[in-house]
Image 1 (cartoon, rainbow, N blue to C red):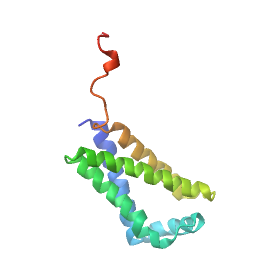
Image 2: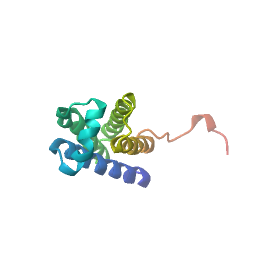
Image 3: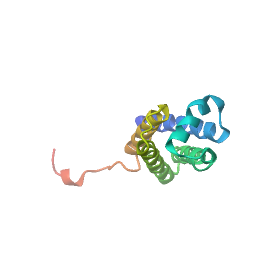
Image 4: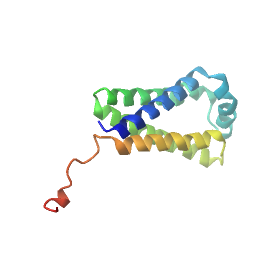
Length: 134
């Protein structure tokens, strides 16, 4: 497994595990910025457990299982996290919310995209259109 993929996946796992569990437990330092951002975006605080926290934690779990030998689950988890953060950014943009949560979502999206792009299950082993070219 390529080192770049493993490192990127581990960072993505760490960020989403912390963020998911912080949301589900309503971790006080996070809630100082997250609470007002949720209100501006029109997202009920009750969504912190499901879907917000749970989907991040499940994405991290899927990536972990992908590293441990279930590659398609890791690929699906990375794709799911990309979709989740695209939707999160849309939600912030829709109401013009450029709080710290918006910029964190950009970072999380970048990590998910990088993890998906480096996924060895998606990398072509051969380039058929280049066969015979030295």
